[in-house]
Amino acid sequence: MTELNKISLKILSDGKGILAADESTGTMTKRLESVKVPSNEENRLLFRKTLFSSESMKNCIGGVILYDETIKQSSESKTIPEIINASGAVVGIKVDTGAKTLAGSPEEKITEGLDGLRERLKKYYELGARFTKWRGVYTISENYPSKLSIHSNAHALARYAKLVQECEMVPIVEPEVLMDGKHSAKTCFEKTSEVIKKCFEELMLHKIDLSGLILKPNMILDGTNTTKKISNEEVADLTLKCLKESVPQEVPGITFLSGGQSEIEATENLNLINKKNNTNFIMTYSYGRALQQSALKYWSKDIKNIAGTQKIFDHRANMCSLASQGKWSKELEIQG
Ligand code: 5MM
Image (cartoon, rainbow, N blue to C red; front, top):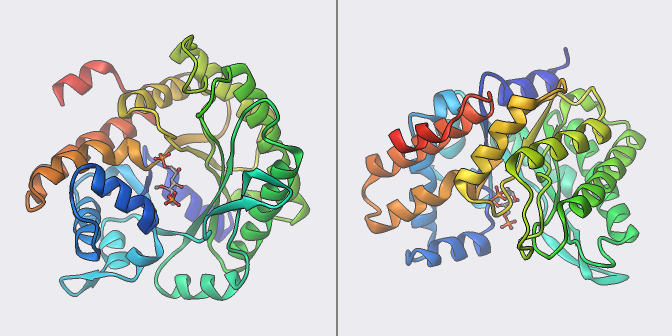
């Protein structure tokens, strides 16, 4: 077993998943302003530190993805990486610098951040990071995602992943096919499969150690603007079929993004995926909104109510952990 494989399994095993707290300052500002809390460094730290010192961190969170600002912050003479490590979770860092207009197809995006990446990775390693994340974004419409966007993003993801492994960290490869649009789940299945297959083609060309990599994909869903929706059972079936056909066996685990699904929807779908899991992959969560939404709303009413906020977060994390083992049910939500 390689060191990278060990780190991956530490993050994913025993009913654990990832807390994606890597919102860039722009996104975090939107989230805070939506609940009428001013977005300043102090408040961003307070909310995040509240989550990172919750009880459920020990049993439900195997890794936390941070943003550049957070990995350098401290509270009560402890650095944020120290607080996370104390719970047993692994520190991760988002290393892309965002999705920009794709030259040659201006309605699509290409994720940037390769320039100077090797040097930045070394600094993040020194700060305590042992895994990283890079997100490629794809939209579905009549002509998209284009071959150009599928190819360019896969190439960037592979170059990123190789640099990360060279620096002895585990890369999370996140190709996110967005839910926005009026496409069917069938189209989402076809496009997501094409995107993931291309990513692995490039990853293999770059000689990535696949046992030390985590894939973070979207689930297969109908577009947000369709009225006719497939059932949760069908979501699970199509998602499993897509991953079984597109992901090489050596990959230890898959951590889904929630992508705008409600907390319950993202939990229910993950639970069904695990109930039906007929692959060797660990299937768990790397949720941002689906782990934080309720906690953020509660916290915004009184930002000094740490214990109350942690209780809300703990419940969500426990539900996701059960779902990652196929042991969740709706009744547990009501009791919680
Ligand atoms: C936490 O949000 C991340 C994106 O931040 P920026 O847009 O500010 O760069 C995002 O990559 C996130 O990690 C994943 O999309 C998963 O989050 P959701 O909310 O979709 O589960």
